[in-house]
Length: 96
Image (cartoon, rainbow, N blue to C red):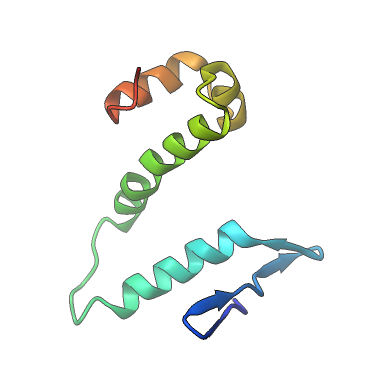
């Protein structure tokens, strides 16, 4: 990871694969590094489930917003079927 903090903001350097920057990956790596830094001696457990719980709802919210509320388009973007999307939206209280 090559992101550096400068004057209160992160300057993106990002992780590069085949010459392409992967900013989402960089943000995830930074967030996880920060999580471990701030554990204050606590021992993490069930991290995989924790990450999925923390990321899944904002993922659906942002993709639905990006798709301007069009559930078919949002499902396509996510690579899931519309029924699964609708189930998840209900689960997170995001259904209309």
